[in-house]
Image (cartoon, rainbow over all chains, first blue to last red; front, top):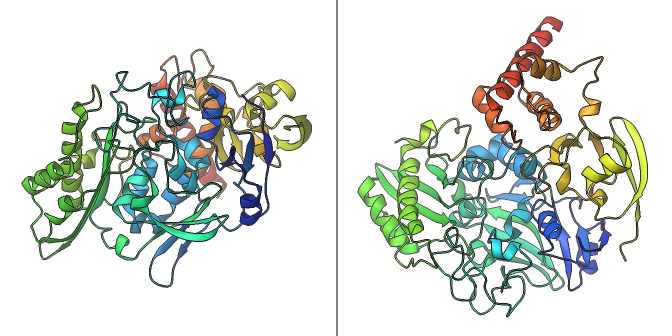
Length: 347
Length: 164
């Protein structure tokens, strides 16, 4: 591993002042430390923000919204009974990720910033435009089973691996940040970027900008009775999603009054298609309706290699997550959350 | 740049001071500098859980923590849980129920299970499988590991009830 300077600033402003090109903020370290072990990332300066005061709270806001500090640990957030009751699909997504030990270390902000699990990105000897602009893409024509089927181009076909970000996208979360130019809010839909001409820029964050919190509106909690996160993976623990979906519905008099659907594992960001949600409005929940919505959500999908299977898989997972949501949030989540083999998965 | 730094750790109740490079991983500080060799290096990629320790009250993988990050932390390893003369209930349950074969994963398994039972003293089998999912057994002895943890839970609960 490369040598680096390590510092533990006392405040957010000290942390931002300490940032310089080539520096990295360190939260729980569950992603950054592993990437530094392989040499995929070699920051010259590591700014440990894990103990910054005031960023580890889950707060109710006066307007009925909820604010989650960037340093709240995954296990704390998923295990908070009030939070899990209001946002069950976030809790389910968190509990389906990594393992107990990693959820104890991983932070909310770090989860938003986690890097792709594309093996060509992780291997410093492979070409990767994300690691280094203009370096080429080792994944194109390579081993691409886990790669994107939406929003990709020849510069990059990697996917965003986060479970948490899928329901956050579905629920229109807002990311609060502070950087050298002050504080701002970033809509979740704008937070992660598709590769475009600059695949090395994975998020909307400017150099040195730090995530302070994520906010959820009161309306985001209104679908608490009908929301699910469904994740398909090669084994039911400690595996990233091949495809996942977060679905939340509001129902009134047997009809859908609000529908939210985001799909994970298919692109460099959680995939959300307004037209797919709109076609469910005013309709009674129904398997055929959910299939049609899922088809619209995947309309633009194209394989980036030998991953065409993902398109059909994503349609099915999306439709099934909507059916699960319509059936109602279970009172007790399955112990292997989001497992398609779990009891409550059968509807 | 990256000078060694003074690191203070409380390991199994004892204060330890040492100089380490920030990039040193906690597992190596424990094993190679402090000679606390209970936590093992398995995969060194945060998959297998052989390096599990308790840090500030939470199970973590010590191969994914920089020494510098741990500075100031309280750490418990398997050595702080029981000893050959005085086995922890979990250690005894693993012995009674054949919860180990080669034994390489066992310190991590038991260290993790102590926290699991603290957080949830009456787990179901599903709870145990979910809670222990970050610990891999390369002998694939999971059935008896789950049995051991459940047996220890029953024994600890009974002891607690008797005390009340």
